[in-house]
Structure formats: structure tokens, C-alpha cells
Length: 398
Image (cartoon, rainbow, N blue to C red; front, top):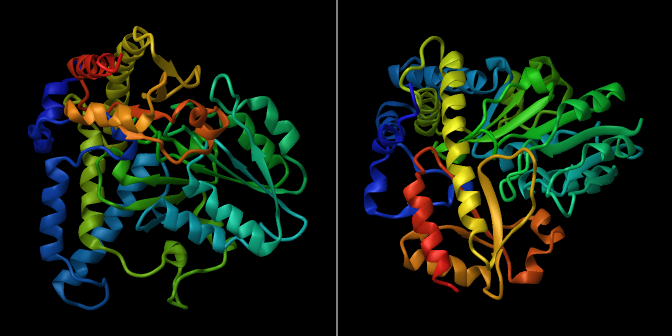
């Protein structure tokens, strides 16, 4: 059955305000099912899982369900799922707990393609514990992380590599398999941020062999909740506990503070939403996720091809980077027109986009030298008609 974008749009009543949303890299719209679930769960859950009261038992069940849903999302083990306010908080906790891997004599590798959420925590940890920092650089023509550089970056002193699976500004997809093998050969760990890719691609922690992966639910229309998943749950015990509870075990060792159980219920609902993007999907949640994500990806690839052709028809548009493999996200500059002005013109025409996203990759590719960059991305509810509206508004700039 073909992907039914009209049906998917119907799951988002907020689209009724008339705005066209190309700001997906900042987070997709929240489906009505998620909003309703959050509201209901907040009314029925307790603030803690402790105690014999029914609301406490419901909260405990929500927590277990959230771990199970995230495990299905990434093909992981629920026992390895750490939950928190967002991926930046979780990755900061992980970095804080990494003293044995970020000490003197060791090396940590980060990439300029990543968001700061997967850079800043490791820079702080290296500074605090004494590790040397190395950088994986972006190809200034394609916007990709070249695979050839990993052999020269990874050494016997490498203890951790933090990298994104896809850029939230350039759309470039990272080739992870060869890199993870090199890191594991020297006894290091690989931490992958899937936050940009998760709304578009089926994530499989076992296939990539990453040791830890992170996602942010807001990316696909979920509530403000992040998750961090260990491929092997036992690995968690090799990190220092950051919990305020001295008796914490398992994932709770890396969780700071209490949980917002209403938001966790919304997290489960948002993953169910992803699994139901294709109405014909059947089977387990993981099986439905596989069908739905592949169906949505095929649809969005067609829309993105149309978007690329349309933007290239504009003589003043300058597309930044040309990655071979990508998610449906891109950044562009407009000749002699600052990015802020471009985004304001789009807003004047009922279109939302992002100006001057905080990105080391855009800095390296010279976006600031041409007035900044506009970042846009497709969502599950995007259409060719919206692309036409975007291009007409851009054409009005000259």
C-alpha cells in the first residue's frame, strides 16, 4: 500500500493553522495521539514508582513500557535503556561517568559534523580528566565525514569515539561500520547520536555495532525526552554511577533525578506513531517500525528529490555540501541575502525554516562567509505542494 500522506497529516491537528513546516530539524509536530496520551498519563500517574498505591504501580509500568519501546526503536535490550530529559543531559551524564576512558594517556575522538550535544560533554570530560581530543573533519566539498581519516585518527590510545549517524544541518549520513571495527580493535567504545536520523531511518544498534546510541524523541514528534541505549547492558556497570541514589542499579545508575511519567507515556505513544505511519504494517512493534520507516523513507526520498531539483532551479540558491548518502535535510545560502532575511521572508509567507543553526560543520563549509545558512528538512507530513510554496517564496527574493 502506498504511503498515505493525507492520512498522516490527519494525525496532526496542529497543521490546521495553515503554516508550512520545513523546520523538522528542530523537531517535528506532535501527533494528537501523543498529546492526548501525555495529558491522560499525567492525571493517572504518581511522581514515583515507590509504594503500593495503584498510581505508583502505573508509573512503574509506564517506565518499563518506555524502556521496551525505545529498545524496539533501536533493536536493543530494554535492560540497556537509559531515559532522561534529552540526549544532551544523558550524554553529559555518560561523559561525567567516563573518567576511566578520558584520563591522561588516552584519546577521545569527536566530529565536526555532530551537534554540540555530542561534542561539548566529551570536550568537558577530556579537559576534566586529561584525555587528548582528536577531531574527525568534514569534507569541505561534500559535507561528509570521509571514511579514510579514521585509520589515521584511531590509535592504541583511543578509548572513545563520539559521532553522529547523520547531520541535522547538512543531511550527510556517516558510514559507521568500518569505523566501529577499527575502534573495537583497539579496545575503544563508539557512542553514536542517532537523533537526526531516527525520524527518517530504521535504527539497528546491532547492525552498526555501536556500543551506545542516543536519540531525542522531539525529533520525530515525541515529547521532550531523550534515551541512551547500551548494546550490551552489562557495559553500563563499567561506568561510574551518577545517580543521587547510592543503591541505584542498571539504567538508573546513569539517570539523574526523577522521571516525568506523563512524558514517558508520550514517548511510548510517539514510537507507536512511527510504527503506524504505514497503515498496512503488521506484526510486532519492531516489525511494524521496519515497514513504516521504510515506507516513509521511500516517500520522503521522492519529495526530497523534487525539493533538490526545485531549489537548483533558483539561480541565487547555493546548496551547501553534496553528500552521496543523506537524510531529507539540507542547508543553503541565498546569494547576497542574509539567512535571517530569507527566513523572515519565508515566515511572511507562512513557511517555517531555520536560520544560522549552531553547527561547526556549517562554519567549516564557509556558510558564515556568505551571510549564513538556511536549514530545512522534511517531515512525515510534507508534500510537493508545500515544496512549491517554499520555492515561490524564495523566488520572490530575486
